[in-house]
Amino acid sequence: TSGSEENDVVVIGGGPGGYVAAIKAAQLGLKTTCIEKRGTLGGTCLNVGCIPSKALLHSSHMFHEAQHSFASHGVKFSSVEVDLPAMMAQKDKAVSTLTRGIEGLLKKNKVNYVKGYGKFISPSEVSVDTIDGANTVVKGKNIIIATGSDVKSLPGITIDEEKIVSSTGALALKKIPKKLVVIGAGYIGLEMGSVWRRLGSEVTVVEFAPDIVPSMDGEVRKQFQRMLEKQKMKFMLKTKVVGVDTSGDGVKLTLEPASGGDQTTLEADVVLVSAGRTPFTAGLGLDKIGVETDKVGRIPVDERFATNVSGVYAIGDVIPGPMLAHKAEEDGVACVEFIAGKHGHVDYDKVPGVVYTHPEVASVGKTEEQVKALGVEYCVGKFPLLANSRAKAIDDAEGLVKIIAEKETDKILGVHIMAPNAGELIHEAALALTYDASSEDIARVCHAHPTMSEALKEAAMATHDKAIHI
Ligand code: FAD
Image (tube, rainbow, N blue to C red; front, side, top):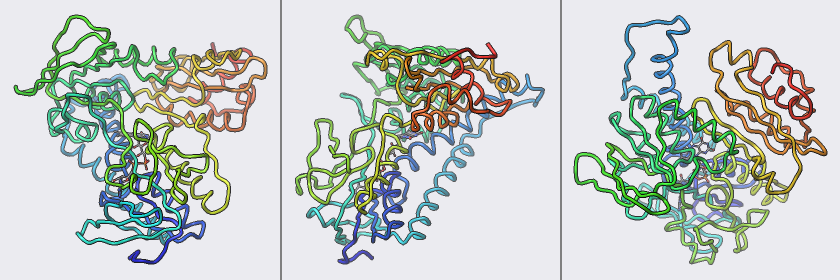
């Protein structure tokens, strides 16, 4: 095992930030150990986040399509039903195959993997209580904190993962709730709400703010909310939860307008608390070595991902920036490149964000509101999916592409896509932004026909000139 041998790099946490940093460090020839307490690698993302949620989103979408769309495509059968245990088993299989795959990758790259809870005893030593009950000290010239984040509850609400669940419980419900209330209209709440809505639950989303997904472009958000309402998801915006009663069979919530006023009640079988995530550094001993945290518990770092303590770095959900798996991975690679004496770089302005509902909503760069606030003169090009031949051919044409470009230079500032596979389409835009492309650059790229990517080309044409198909 690690023993007292010194590593060049020790990574605490085996999530997308940590395991990617460990593999990259080993690839750069650094002797590396990765410490993970969970027993499986992949962190929140693989075990209780991105992957299981996407598995259930796909399965529930297939059920929904079978019920509501297949017949119009001429595919008929007499009955469709949900086998929830089988659906969950498929999700679990996806998770376990992938977590084992990462363990294989660590082995292949000769990363030493220690299963246990790490805590600092000095800036270059981590004591690990291993999951088999032993203790070992892992030494490293450089230590990377990649301990991620945890679910956050709200004052007065206790998560029991049965009636009041976090996203983790919502990924493993044993039966389909008749009524599900989601507290918080961020992307995780909307994705999990969509899963159970498609499987038959009545879903009500309660949100304190006046809007769903606050980071989204306002115009796209409006269409997105309308689309979710068409799928019979209900929204109670500008509403706060002031009381929770679990004494009966289900849960009774007491609600109040955000600005105060008359109280109402709302009943549910299951309540999903989806009010954000909080950086996780419990039991890590940060105070012992003097690593600072900010007022919400994140670890501030400089452009090299270095904390205020020499030799100690931090990446991923535990530092400021978008709490996303791909951002954690980019942090991990850049951090290790700096440690190896090279140069790393992550541009947080060009991290794509995707909401994996149906259709998906994806964006990269700035929203129209942000561009306006900067006082930059801009042009907007839009193209509705209704005018895209591929979307019409498959009868899945809800959505749009919106491109915002600087007026003077035509440089692309932001791209927002609502489309069945927006999460894939967005990367052409991410590449364009990274290379400081103009909308004319995208418009002049030959796009294959018939594809939904043509909607991006047409929106680009609309930004600096005119679209052809509308
Ligand atoms: P984590 O993944 O949280 O990993 C940290 C790891 O460190 C954990 O495994 C933890 O056990 C371990 N650890 C903590 N402390 C210690 C210690 N002291 N010793 C040893 N080990 C320790 N992001 C996306 O980009 N796309 C999505 O579609 C998406 N969907 C999501 C859906 C849900 C339901 C949730 C909850 C999250 C989702 N996310 C998604 C967010 C994504 O999961 C996180 O941004 C990502 O996992 C952060 O990676 P990380 O490596 O920083 O931390």
